[in-house]
Length: 222
Ligand code: GSH
Image 1 (cartoon, rainbow, N blue to C red):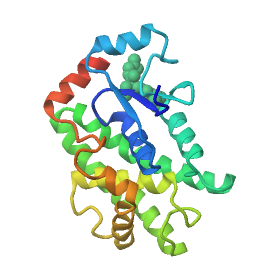
Image 2 (image 1 turned 90 degrees about the vertical axis):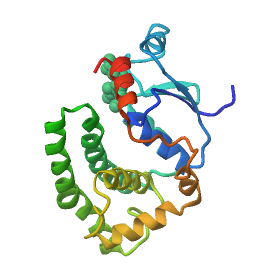
Image 3 (image 1 turned 90 degrees about the horizontal axis):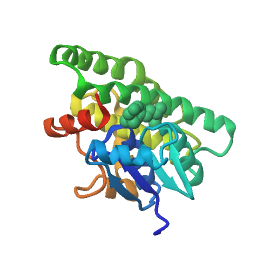
Image 4 (image 1 turned 135 degrees about the vertical axis):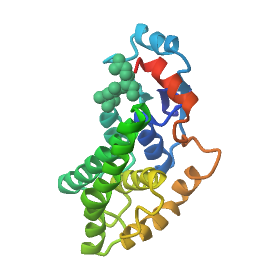
């Protein structure tokens, strides 16, 4: 065993992408075991690797961890990206839940019918600009620091950058009314580990194309 975390998921962003982001930003190398077929998924289930018969699953520190949020909390805590005390952790949790809600809406789009999808894209861009991004813009304005919590890089910053880039894929000028978030995006994209993850050829996954959507539908019975 290499000692590196091993990520079990399909060859897509899905619920695993934030785990890839967090590990990459923490500077942790990881391996991926890509499930290509429904049978690959079934094998993991029958060999007892999946506590709730679901992925994402990450082998780390002798555990086979499932439940995305549990995995992310563990990694954030282990690599010192989860605040210095309970209050900082509470803020990080609140910010992360906001970006999780926003990204959850985006993640569902490829599996929706064209008319529903069109309405939801409008809803997502509206929510991003009126509910979510104003919160992060205000946080940065109020404390005047480079990072969201504790004047130090945390899981909240990494998750927000992931959410910004995902939302920009729907509407490239989505940050036009948010100057501090534009500057934040520039700063975060230049953190060396993140900069590396944003380069072509990294373990970051692209948005789903038609072929991958069909494959994901088969693997997960969607
Ligand atoms: N609460 C779980 C988490 O956040 O990790 C949900 C995991 C989940 O729904 N995983 C999907 C899955 O395994 C793939 S993204 N679906 C098959 C199933 O639920 O039977």
